[in-house]
Image (cartoon, rainbow, N blue to C red; front, side, top):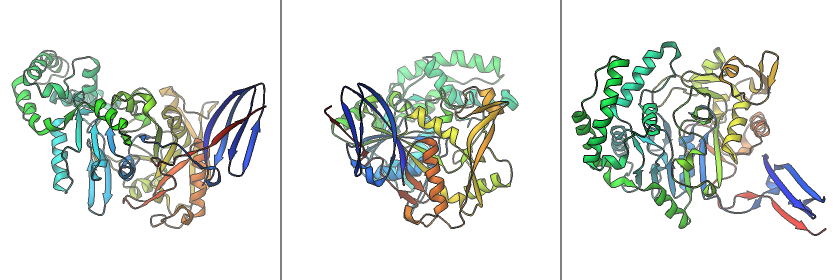
Length: 492
């Protein structure tokens, strides 16, 4: 299966030859500035430099199946690090040993011998973290030194949850649709420079001082604005300081840990939560999360420089879902939408809320590929489309007399856009038991190829079910033989 990859060639006063497969393209010119796109096929794939540091991000509104993809790729990585979000995330991994649900801990913890890290960009509810650790241990998962927690990560405090719940109630019909986990207010305090970090929890006197100082203002806010009873500093401190001994041994300088791992040549897998269109800067604002869910967040959320990132894998469902409020141009509120919801079991693993469902949206994907710099894609839940007579992909939007072929940034415009669809044939055969790309129905291959064409990004992995073994790996994004085109110069 082919895919598209961009190559920028700059050369002066020479001829440039691009070798692929058995052919060579020679381009000449006194002042050459050539941008070309070549279809990647097995014939022109060349072995090249390793890709030890890979970022995995969602290309839609979250719930794309990143947990399963990270679980599979973790076998080829040494370190798996979560770089943003909090316990509002929900990753589900199904193995022969059972179903494992993750909210904070990277799903790579299921792979023995791997180091898992919660980066400084994550906001942590210590009670929720300890509960998750205990639950996973009860399922036979080993959690010890293999889980590291950044000392710079900020804490979610009880008053953060109270503020978020009260704020959502006050919004009424204009509510954002948050999980009520206190994520947003925790990030607000972080930016206001009054946040409390993991390192503070390990210094009781400093922790008490910060809690007491914060509650002076926060209690006044809760009482005056939301008419709620405030919090007692002693009670909050007693609860949280009891958590400290449980997490103390896991606390590290995450940036230093990752830098050391890279110096030792270890492969690092950066795991994003939520999805591109929930990113606080680049998502469908204001219906977004409170952190940077795009690939750039992997750097600021772990203390790793951007030049250390080798590739970005974007994860997308074969259709589109969204939970909570906000624009969703390709949403289906008919029987087809209900079928996608039922067959895809589209209910949040964190909240249980039903997800809104719709056709695949190429504009949503193309935007995600662009802002993340995706080098390849993983397409999940292809099996949910089995048995459908025809499939649709949104390839443009219409807003009044204007046609958009790229996603508009203005929220009020996106909300009023109507999708323009391209219709493709569906397939009758089941894909859930397919073990090779070759065995996929012809129409399924056409559908995947069309995704590649519309996004100009190759598909590396295809998931055909919830179980770990239901995966087709066309190219391993973490392989040490990552494909490259050979570019050679010849004299004029």
